[in-house]
Amino acid sequence: DADVTQTPRNRITKTGKRIMLECSQTKGHDRMYWYRQDPGLGLQLIYYSFDVKDINKGEISDGYSVSRQAQAKFSLSLESAIPNQTALYFCAVGTAKTYEQYFGPGTRLTVT
Amino acid sequence: AQSVTQPDIHITVSEGASLELRCNYSYGATPYLFWYVQSPGQGLQLLLKYFSGDTLVQGIKGFEAEFKRSQSSFNLRKPSVHWSDAAEYFCAVGARWQTGANNLFFGTGTRLTVIP
Image 1: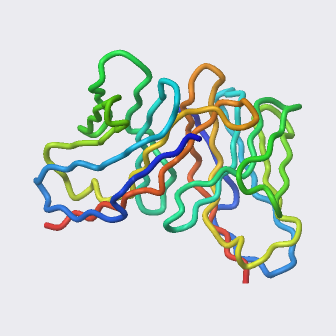
Image 2 (image 1 turned 120 degrees about the horizontal axis):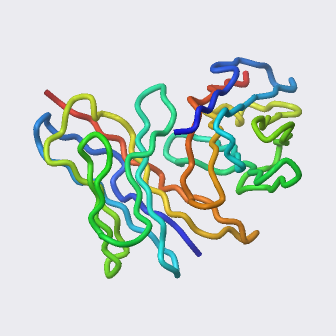
C-alpha cells in the first residue's frame, strides 16, 4: 500500500483564519485526492490532481484551494475557515491504471 | 449518473454471527467495485475489489463480496464476526466524473457494532 501521511492530525482554528492541511506520499503514485468526511454523508471529493500541472475540482470545492507542489505533495487550504468546514479530511493517492485509492490517516479539523 | 447506495446506516451483530452488508450501485458500464473499512480514528483501508472475472472476491480479514450484475449489487460478507470488526464500512464504485476522469464514488457507509 501507499505510504500516505497527513499533517496535522488534529487542528482547532477560529473562524476567518487561513489554514493549510498537508499530504505527502512515498510510493510515487501520480494521482492525489482530497476528501471531506461528515457523519452520514460518506466521503465527498474536494479536489483531485493527476499530476503536478493537473488540478481539478471535485464535488465540493467552494471555500477550498489546493496546491500540488511536487508529485509527492498535495496541500489543501482553507483561505478563511468557517464553522461548517469542521470535518474529517482525508488525502488519498492512486494510479492511472486502476481506480484503487490508498488513504492517509486523516486530519480532524474544528473551526470555532 | 453513477451512484452507490448502502441502505443500512447501522447494523449490530453478535460476535461469532455472520454478517452481510449491502451495497447497490448505479452505473451504465461494467463497474469497478470496492469495499473499504474505517476503524475508529483511522483512515480507510481497502478490504477488497472487483474488476472482472470471478464474481466472488476474497479480501483481507476474512471478508468476501459477491458481484451480482442482475441486481446491481456488491454485498460484503463474513461468516463469523470478531469484535475487532466493529468499524464503518464503505462501498465505492469506480466511474467517470463529468470531467471525464476516472474516480471513486462512495456510499454513505454502514456502521457495524459487534456485541459480545
